[in-house]
Amino acid sequence: MEIPQGPSPELLLQLVSMEMPFGKYKGRVLCNLPVSYLEWFSRKGFPPGKLGMLLTTMLEIKSNGLEDLLVPLKRNNFNKQSK
Image (cartoon, rainbow, N blue to C red; front, side, top):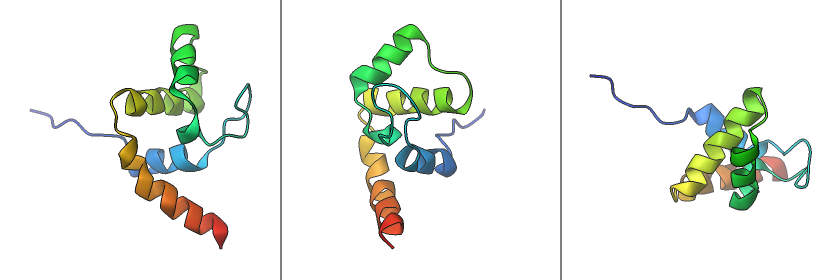
C-alpha cells in the first residue's frame, strides 16, 4: 500500500515566490491570485508546463481551505526578500 504524498517543499516555496508572468494579474505572486482567476483557468485550460502545474496546485490548496500551509513560507520568503 502506497502512502499518498503532498506537494514537495520546493513546489510550495515556488507558490509563495514566483510571480504570474502574464495576464490580468501579471506580477502577482501565485499564492496571492484570487480563486476566481484560478477557477477561470480550470475552465479554460491551465497553461502547459511548470506554470500550469503550479496554478493547478494553488487551486487545489485554495479549494480545500489549506492556505494556512503557506503562511510560514510566505513569512519566511518575505524575510529573505527584505534582507
